[in-house]
Length: 310
Image (cartoon, rainbow, N blue to C red; front, top):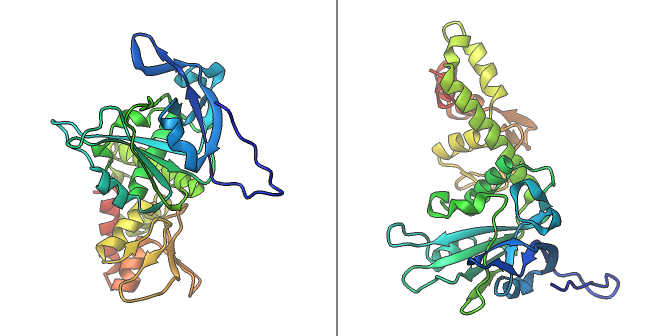
């Protein structure tokens, strides 16, 4: 694939997509490409030309050989398969378009797409390439986080696209494409959220094996509160606020019904609710106690139970 160069002095650089491509399918399976992958780029507006001609992958592979152990790094596109089947329906094209409205996206049809069973590929453009040290576990969590960011259900997608050795065959015959304008994925925010989610999942597993309450001498409130602050996450704080009728936006900002304040936001690293107007931070116990007048003991026990305590 031929790459273009842009003269920064005279021409504004368009949005660029970085990825790998191959033109060498396996003889026994024309939809499978394993060798000959070249890391390259094109303008975002031309990406549908690539998906119609080449096999493509987000990853950069050593020696062009598509294997998990040969991943050198990542591009800045994230790709999801949406395959409706008689035994398992998925999203239709219009539903996907609505879900990703406001996010820079490309939807292309795959070879097996029909008017009855929509089989699509959703491609999202990020604002940066990911760190080359991202492992398979974190990549999968990043993919799940992106799907949540879009408001889609991962259970309705083909989960094989969460693998770091995934390739996507071209559709040279009947591809239909549709671009959606919007903002690029904020990868710094998404990767940090994915890291926090992984930590939370590992904490839940550990908590399931050893009941948390056993460490606290009968459930001392002070010890419980310390545990809550130490293991707090953005997801937990979001859940508590949403239960109270507030809305948590994708960037962590909190919307209060009938109130235009921009002063409330969840810190994605600590999970604390930040009130910039009063220069104060709150954990979920403080939110329930200070804002909603829930007795301190009841608020502590309620949040502690949500985090896996007994």
